[in-house]
Image 1 (cartoon, one colour):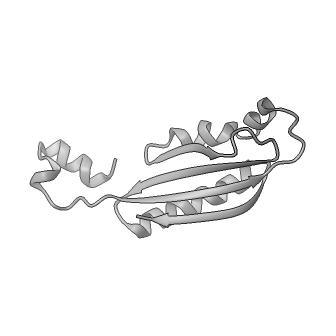
Image 2: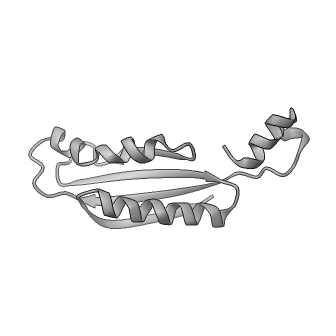
Length: 115
């Protein structure tokens, strides 16, 4: 929830009464290459941190969006909500860097979109 929305809710105003809130959405899709996964359980274990860490963040939504049954690759998408495109870009930059540091899989492709 953005600070502007929290402030409006605290003041008892609804977003329709105030025009300061224009949420933006950023979508980061990462395609991973996996090595040595013998079954889907091992694949899930490799990506435990995706939901455990970033899935609990209030401004992020995390999901495996493709390659569900493949053992050698995975595609995960992270959606971020923010007050500005710049804020979302910075947030997704940090998330991507943290994922590279914590997930034991090579990132083959990164796709970003700010809506």
